[in-house]
Image (cartoon, rainbow, N blue to C red; front, side, top):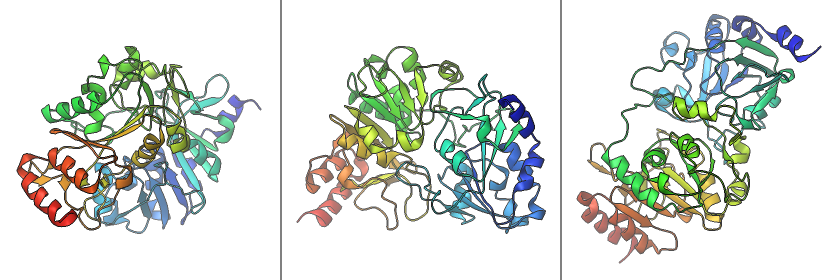
Amino acid sequence: MDWRGEYKKKLVSAEEAVKVVKSGDYLVFAQPEALSLGLALVSRADELTGVRIMGGGGSDLPMYDPGWYEVYPEVFQLETSYVLPLVRTLVKERKSDFMVSGLFAVPDISETKPIDVFMVQISPPDDHGFCSFGASLWKKKEWVREAKVVMAEVNERMIRTYGDNFVHVSEIDYFVEHTPTGKIPGGTDILGRRTSGPGKLEKTIAEYVGSLVKDGDCLEIGVGGNAEWVAQLGNLESKHDLGWHSENTVRGIGTLVMNGVITGKYKNIHQGKAVATAVGGGTKEEMDFINENPLFETYSASYILDPRVIAAHDNMVAINSAIAVDLTGQIAAESVGPVMTSGSGGQLSFAIGAYLSKGGRSIVAIPSTARVGTLSRIVPMLEPGTIVSTPRSLADIVVTEYGVARLKGRTQRERALELIGIAHPDFRVELRKEAERLYWP
């Protein structure tokens, strides 16, 4: 039987596919995908109990609706690997457990939690029977091969990328054809975040960060927070022959490739290619440009976020965001206190990789204050229970709207003074008093 016959034989409705799910099964959903399979699974709520589900933080799957707990509290036991607005309430109210990711920013579940069912979204097969995972890969390819049963929604609108971003029809157990409308609620983006756009503060921070980027550097820019605006507002269009090796691909990167700013000319590996594990953060024009464009390659998170691979690039510049930084350089990007409000993604991997890279730099972009200027994000000590996303031993450069603090190679006193110098002026006197009390006579 050729792949076309195999595909036709495996093509079923979503309702038919989810019949294989049993009470007590462990399911993994790629984020935020397989929506028709999610709806079909929810329709079986009266028949199931104790189904454990691990979904990504951006998941808008039906079972992640808080209202389900009022009616079916025992049906779905949820885990999330990245806390974004769509699931933040669930985690705060302990209706979803938080899955601590490994070094590659994706949960290391294969050894401890065998996957009974993996649900994922793919493109239609090409002429050779290969489907693409679209705009993001993460560990989908590994999970396809580790799961006992694989169900794939076929979305004819999905883009294709080069690299290692494909799966053959023979590796899938069930196909369900479903192309979503792609509509996002007004005022939010695909991750459920408000999309008010950048202002003067974001532009100022982006310009400071951009001033630290040199011709020929290889960049990584994290999604979320102020780092995300560097590609658009950091004056990178004035640079030459930049490279791209990143976890995500933020808006503006596609345009920089399009305009010949990012060429990858000086990359040590994947020379001439823009490489990431996810490329889905661009405008429609950028996504059309990325689709089936050999300049872009997508690889597993296990490869992209391997610090050894990152460090293989000379002049690797990692640009990420944070929630708070203490005066010793500890960087918190996931919580204030013990309650998870965000995720660090690949920040630690890229901080390690940049540290080991010849000429590498790790930059954290952060506003000086929070809550409309009432709280300083530069703090004497992190609040008890706060997760340290990047330890002070890897802290390098911190940027706020008030300037640049260089921490690498500094004493504790020097670090504190550098950070106080970029804190909001309203908090500098108190920060210095606390620094003198805590860190020097």
